[in-house]
Image (cartoon, rainbow, N blue to C red; front, side):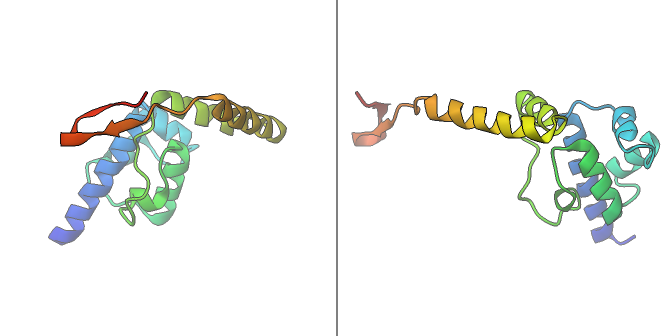
Length: 135
């Protein structure tokens, strides 16, 4: 493995570990979510950069994690980060586990809540860069 390949494997491993930790999954929990496709020791090897995830493996692990996509894990793009809050992750998990009719209902509810939520107060960027709330 060349130095560049080793560095990429290390970066991929860091992304995988960060995504797993953001979900608060242990290695065993993530392995279980892959339906037996990956063991905790193999996932650990990926995280340490000792092994490189295949495209299919990245897709499987991304699906099991639910907070990233395969392209992000493989360092193909930086568009998707793992900066979800625990509430966002819970909402996403619950939404994915709900049947189609209820998903539509949840979306309608979320849109209604958004319409009823007042916008945040505007910040006045007054003279000398001082900020304050507009009246």
